[in-house]
Amino acid sequence: MFGWRKRIGYIGPTVMEVVPYEFYRFAPDGVGLVGVTCSIDDWSPEQFEKGLAQVKAAAAYLGSRAVDFIIHGGGPLVVARGKGYEEIIVKDIEAASKVSATTGVRAAMEALRHMGAQRIAIASPYPERHNQALSAYLGQHGFELVHVEGMDVPFKRLQSVPPAEIRRFAEEVIARAPRCDALYLPCPQWQAAQIVDALEQESGMPVIAYSHASFFVAFRALGLNEPIRGHGRLLASLAEPPR
Image (cartoon, rainbow, N blue to C red; front, side, top):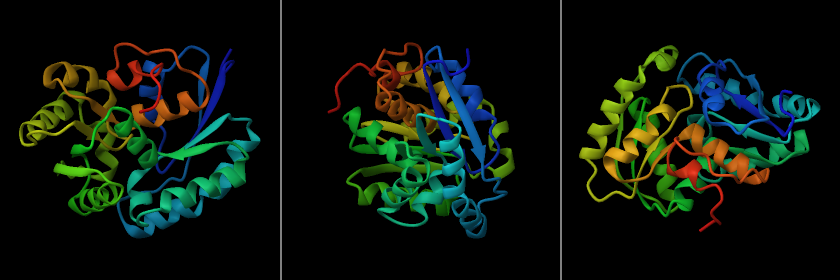
């Protein structure tokens, strides 16, 4: 039966396509995804504000659908508001839904710390201004950004970048990022989670994809601590205590 163990709510800034596709590749049996979208259309500040304005209502609706935890996706929307906004939006979501919550960016930082990573390289699909905003945000939270690079993918083409192309780009970023502790692959709307295991085997370092980090935090919060194999070190470490 769908969601017989747990139901995870997800508030996406745009269409729900890559997130569920990748989620059901690694999710434990009996864990269901219950998603809503804010239907933003591009990278503009106006669209970001449109998406954020819908979050409380979306959270309340997911709460009414008996989800057990909520993830707010869309890192650029959160970092655009500056340091500390992840705390504000989580409180708003939890107040509206009456369940625990996180954001993609907050989960990423938790996952990076869990892996003992402080010196970070980023390979993203984002335009430069969003790379700069994300770098500043992580830097303000104590991470050292060794190298940050984006593909500048058009917003409505994110889902169409082949995983093999993402992998080649990530390999190039790793080569330009000496002595980093981990590679972070932000954005749930490009197919980055599928290349994590191969990249880790090749590079010897942890690779944290946005979707893996988001659901890693959700799984731990829900007591789903069995290791998940074949999808990288982060999900395989679910049974390990926090660092």
